[in-house]
Amino acid sequence: MSYLEWAESQLAEIELLTSMFPNDDELELTEQLALADLRNYVEGSDSGDKPPPSRPQFLIKHKLETSSMEGVITLFCSYPSEYPSVLPDTTVRCSALSRAEQTQLQAQLTKYLMENCQGEVCVLAALDWVKDNLPLFLNKSLLPAPTPKAESACPPEVFSRLWIYSHHIYNKSKRKNILEWSKELGLSGFSMPGKPGIVCVEGPQSACEEFWSRVKVLTWKKIMIRHREDITIDRQGEDGKTVESIDSLRKFTGFEEAMFDPHGNRGNHMDLGQLYQFLNEKGCCDVFQIYFGIEGR
Image (cartoon, rainbow, N blue to C red):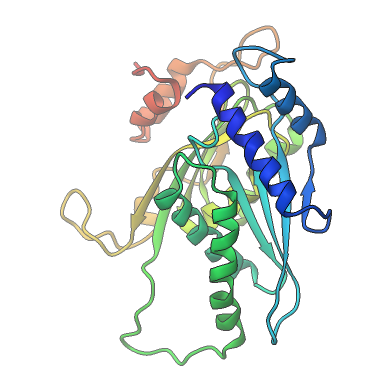
């Protein structure tokens, strides 16, 4: 599909949503100019090979209707240029849930969309899934903590490594947030500022998902998860040995901002050859081709 076809699908979905949720307390378009730019692009008054850089963003608010709990659940959505060939950026917020429960709900929603909605507009599907599954989390939060059992069927712990790509990372505040949030959440990895911007975080899946939910809602020209790795703990690795802990899977020690011979008029371009050597030393050189479409050396 082309950018124009993707934009047509995006506009059609937004128009459907506005007809279904006509009130501001149900649907709030947070980027009106982005919607106008998208409409002009689709209707041909702002023609070009590439879509407008501003991206539509909106909030859908759904009131909880349970006898034991009152409140509002909010679904934040942002369209990447390639949506619906890639998933939209979605974040769920609900005051009735703890941060850990929200993170778990978010992770399960992302898994559902990846398995069932690739290549299709899916905001309504995401909202329906949240409405159907939220009672399970609410009921769980109202129950007393169960007494631990020797052979309780706990969900397996999952290690994740997210490879995030941004059109650029210049802003000092964003760079500071990336460093502080990774430290707060116990994540290791690195960030490379400049154009393009690259961030790698690794650690417990829930912490990685929380990091991504914070970062993606900042104002970006373009940001996406280019590649992700998810590994279940207590399974056999490639060498036949059992993976025993999160730390045994880490390829980075701590989190750092990495600079590779900045150059260019604004000093905002990095030496990609040095980046490749850095990744190679960490055992991650395969991701270079995923980012840039060429083999590094």
